[in-house]
Length: 459
Image (cartoon, rainbow, N blue to C red; front, side, top):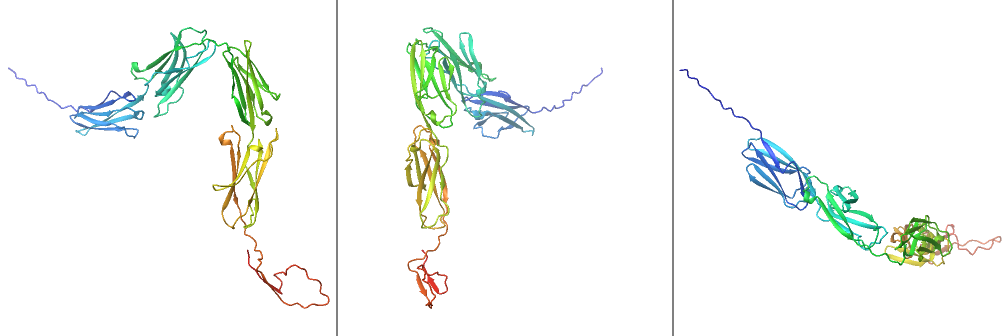
């Protein structure tokens, strides 16, 4: 009997290190939620793990070693700053190493839409409904729809680019015109966040509100904007708006109580505009608007007040000053209206040296130039000083940043000339008198004469 021997050789096979990340290579997490990332190895009996944010900023997280082959990264409270790429590096005890990364995408969509403007609607009149969705991220992925029944009335996406690290509030406006009063209707604002990976039950939020239509009042209500006193600057563009409520179609007429020409235009059946492209001094007047609707007439008025104050003060006389001598400084403000409302102040540091108002009565239709003079006596030469002329137009309604203008100039003091004091001593030498000599001048002798010596004290 033949004996055969079969030799079986077992050759060890080298298995490569396998690293896995859970929940996957991309994870979508909601602001405020808890996120747990798991990093583990296969084909390795024991490994060390290193977690790192590839965008080089702190994660505000904790790490937990579950076993010799698994580690966890735990973020207790997800914030917008956690939208990053995270790396897990596994180092096996046999010296092999592998790296896996995960992209963390963050979203925020915690609140239902808020609808406003749905009450006190007027039949036959346009009403703006507003839907606002707050604390959204990312904003450009939000879609807002206006829905009635099965009909989508309007649809739009967030048109603002998302600002990294900031929650956003997005608003949609829908113009709604109810056809009749007393009809029970409602409208829905539906918001959908189109971010892949967001759970289906968190993708959409909506709010439904009733549309409250009020009976149309028989009283015509007219308005004028701006109303009352309108203050406008020479050269600016002025628009007055006259409109009506409780009326579907009205006729408008504009009048100037000074019989001045007015340029008007109709914007809609319920509003008219008066446009002054370039305001002039002669536009200072009282303007009225009359609105007519279904036999009713309403009039509204506005007082237009014009001002001019375009230039900074101009200061002169501040150069070549002499110490101990009175010098007149002049401040002039050009093209002012109304002049009697202008206040001019001379200021050094925190001290107001002089204050005065324009004392000339304003001449209607004319710009004015106003001047203030301040007498200044410098005490000594060589001191670095300056002075400010500050002009303020004290007219209610002028914007704060247009009320005051000022100019600051240096005070240049020149060296003074020496004056002869009362203690000067004159010493004269006798001079022979001849028969041909003439009457001497009463003027004092010239100090440069060889026959006269002058000792003087300079003041």
